[in-house]
Length: 273
Image (cartoon, rainbow, N blue to C red; front, side):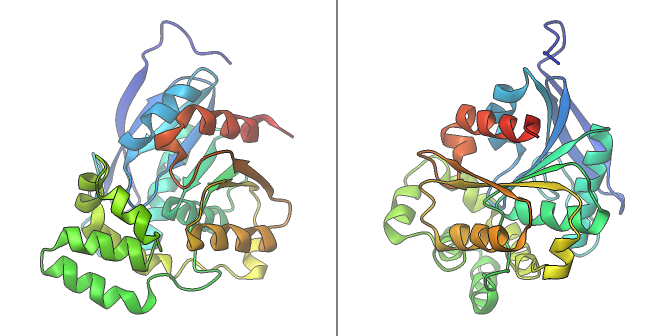
């Protein structure tokens, strides 16, 4: 279905999750729905150019994961189960035939949601992070918590990227000089909780064998971060029937650096048999 020229480019709204938390979202375009579950150092706004590139053929729903953008943090303790409930609420809103795209930590959330709820649609995992190869936060979490508690969010962000995300030192130095850095620093306090939850994303072989969704795995050609490659490799080994696509010339953030290319690859996942 092609986009109606008279339809608004963007519709903003909210949906209420299972625990009463209000989740903000934006819908772009018309057609087969795609729900995007963003990563740890992102928010829905970072995916707008991707949504605009895809809106001619699909209805793209971008939502802020809890505690970010227009979404409430929730009244109770943070939990991966609550993240899955939020995604479930947006998928239900999206309607019949919805597909899910999960990126980085959001990819881990999307995978666990699909397993828990028996999701039967198309599941596109762009460098989904998990503890399948090994725990990522582990022994580094106390030091990260201490930096955040001390209010040194800049140092906490650098520590998280170096020790948990495993960003090479030269890339970390460059990243600190980009306009992306202040936004990442602002999101770091929430990353402490997500890093702990990430270490629990380790579905068993039996659980993965029971996945009802049709999975696609996306891996940036330039993704040199060890966790990205190892987590994707772990899924390639364990997810039967998964299709792996490289993203030429890109790394872990194609949605920022080449959203049109990423949209073309995702569109292929959404239509091929």
